[in-house]
Length: 142
Figure 1: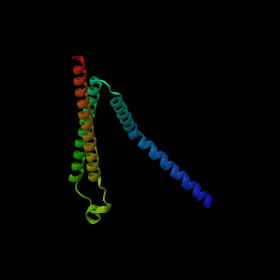
Figure 2: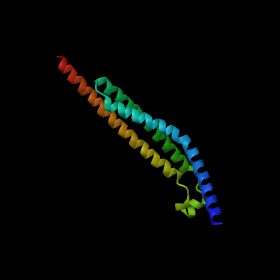
Figure 3: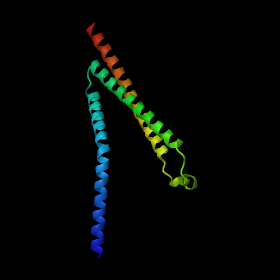
Figure 4: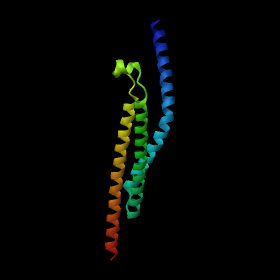
């Protein structure tokens, strides 16, 4: 009887894990693509040697920052929508047990804003490097 219970428990756990991995895989495919793009961008930043390379990397970081800003705005909009909905009785009686979807969206917005700020800082750094390289090559040409 004990073995049967263990077998049933393991089977159920395996089915739940497979379901979770399948549903998470859809969202992870998009995340994996963006992670590979980020890795590619950082690799380009490390390999940049010329003024044009740094300018290209700066543009890509700026575009990434703008995309993250757009994402943050979308998360803030969702948070406002969640907060505008009428609260359930559970939220009034036991607020800690009620779903906190608005809070989660606000946290995602903060993360997106931080990522955008980091991208803008990296873009500024590469713009500075592009300008410095252009000046040193212009000085060397004279």
